[in-house]
Length: 116
Image (cartoon, rainbow, N blue to C red):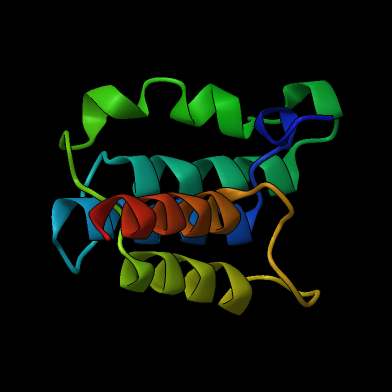
């Protein structure tokens, strides 16, 4: 299963919400924003009886570029904040392999290399 096919859970939602706040420069949830939608999806998924009914990461973030500001380079601090949010909301240790936190960390590494 690819990460996009993974049903959104609360740790994914927290990471998405933190990433949105980092991208927009805010420190509060944006009403109707990607983070709010991710939290709603995680709550829905927790109650969904069938796997086919669950909302996946790709269902939610497929149009993220239309809802987030363009050209915000991911920094190491951004990645650390997102990873921290993911870890605080996850029962088991570690981030989701290939998930939001790891994607942010990878983007930060690329940005650091390109700016050096």
